[in-house]
Amino acid sequence: MSDDVRTPVIGIIGGSGLYDIEGLEDQRWQRVSSPWGEASDQLLFGTLDGVSVVFLPRHGRGHKLSPTDLNYRANIDVMKRAGVTDILSLSAVGSLKGELPPGHFVIVDQFIDRTFARAKSFFGAGCVAHVSMADPVCRRLGDALERAAVEQGLPVTRGGTYLAMEGPQFSTRAESHLYRSWGCSVIGMTNMPEAKLAREAEICYATVAMVTDFDCWHTEHEAVTVEQVVKVLLGNADKARGLVRAVVPGLGGERHVCSAGCDHALDYAIITPSAARDPEVVARLDAVAGRMLG
Ligand SMILES: CSC[C@H]1O[C@H](OP(=O)(O)O)[C@H](O)[C@@H]1O
Ligand SMILES: Nc1ncnc2[nH]cnc12
Image (cartoon, rainbow, N blue to C red; front, side, top):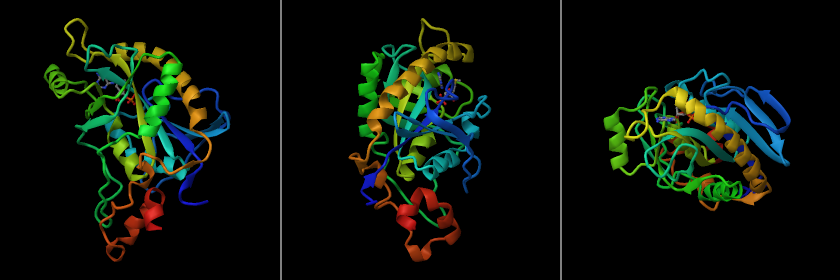
């Protein structure tokens, strides 16, 4: 197959409340090993209307892993090894704007990364690369998600900034007000470095941020608790499953390289010349950067 043509494999990363996916045909859970360590769980392989789908519960089945403990590199690496070309990330978030109430869906288009205790790149000593994160979300996937959400009659907003915090504690009121003053729309703990690593692995990435609470800034609402998040996200999770069923069929069929450029992110990113690269580091990059290093 030409390097310009893709047979899409849709990766779905399910967040809090989404530990499986319904309606997949020929489904099977299978462990995929990675030189970056253990992924959060086995991958669930199957098809939806003939389109290949690979599902990963971000926190593992049973929600055993906290945002800081996730092996984000292994999660993206196993998706790449499974042939995933496009990732739809589904995430619970707190709202930082009055017009985004619990139950609302936001197809975010920007991130601010305030996480600090996570490995954030596949590259480093032995093979250095710098990809662009100017537009961290795939416009093509965002368009498809927006169309499907509107068709499903979901309350949805296109665009908005997701503030990624370290957690696992929720924000202080001062932090929540600070992020609002920065113009952020929603807050969560997981989409960074996930989006950065998807870009390095040349996988298109988009997030559906599902609002569960008003964090702790709103004078007329109690500060967020897990009890409140879980209550709202059970309803959101059903809507998210419907959204996945609606969006995936339209993403199947052969396509050319992503018009947004996500799947060529490494074209000019690797700065270490081949003679200076560490072979062991290059070997670990076989899946994510094999197109450039192989
Ligand atoms: C259970 S509330 C906090 C938890 O939920 C979100 O996770 P995900 O993005 O995987 O849905 C948030 O980022 C926190 O990890
Ligand atoms: N208020 C909040 N802060 C961080 N992560 C969240 N996930 C759901 N609600 C959240």
